[in-house]
Amino acid sequence: MNTHFEYRQGRLFAEDVPLAEIASRFGTPCYVYSHAALMDRYREFEQGLAGRDHLVCYAVKANSNLALLNLFARLGAGFDIVSGGELQRVLAAGGDAAKVVFSGVGKTAAEMRLALEAGILCFNVESEAELLRLNQVAGDMGRTAPVSLRVNPDVDPKTHPYISTGLKQSKFGVAFAEALGLYRKAAALPHVRVTGLDCHIGSQLTEAEPFVAAAEKVLGLADALAREGIVLDHLDLGGGLGICYRDETPPSIAAYTDALKQAVQGRREKLLVEPGRSLVGNAGVLLTRVEYLKPGEEKHFVIVDAAMNDLMRPALYDAYHAIREVEQRDVPRRRYEVVGPVCESGDFLGHDRDLAVSEGDLLAIMSAGAYGMSMSSNYNTRPRAAEVLVEGASVHLARERETVEQLFAGEHFRA
Image (spheres, rainbow, N blue to C red):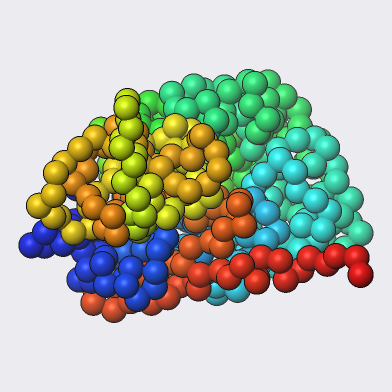
């Protein structure tokens, strides 16, 4: 159990603040994050990698709220980005561009220029076409682009196929068999400089073995590059460490970092890692209010004010999130489908949940700190939720709730 979200006398708290008070103050749906949980997870990575040159690059796509980015920036983190917009968020939050790695298969020329002007640490290049475009863009700017190749090691991460990124059929990365030849081309280009080697095999991994297998393949390639005079500054072994949503037993952060350190023992290159979900996933919950109880012949429904547009993971991946009553009451407990008001049959937050609730009660959708708000949308013209950061007994509004007027402010009809 995440001790930063716990019951006290039948009331669910975020650190020292009752979640019911947050709902009363900021409304629902509302994302709530624990400052202490974020700090603890980041420090576990730092402690685990102590003793060797390293950089923890937070994967911004997991949760890109400025308050969280600022927290990690103040802790000294780097950042793994996948768009120019994410780079702008990192810079607005006080992040250091020199600690940013830029991943993603579809970088535009404009995004490349933005990153070169900012002075990022490295581009994680994912194809020959991207490499050639980056060389051209950098040349036009009179710059030299630092690059690593994201190499696809063809290692099965044993996770959901939608978040598996290191197999041969994946759109991500450069095929392992082609990597050496492409590194040779990169080394010969006038406007790029080879600085590293990158791999990332997937997300929500619950075993250490795939990480180690991928690292071993990457290290063999690094040795082959060294024999050709291509010397690397860093090895980026990606992220993907899973969290416990239900009954998963992923390696601890300490076990994960120990395995990585063992794999690179004796090597001189700086070690980069790109955690996202493992930093923020269990640091957040989604607060929602029960609108209606709807009994049925085969199933009973709890209809809440949060929906698939607020938390896409259940509809997209059939993902499980624990659902807890915010205030425990002496009412009949029944088995329910927890669903939202969006006009889609796939709009659900949980199947077959045993809950003791009445209309107007609050529920907390647990483990919602990663890929919750960052994947949310305005489907059905629903304003996105507020976001709140709790630190001890203090509460900070990290993002105001959107208004409907904001949603159509940039739209125009013909007069």
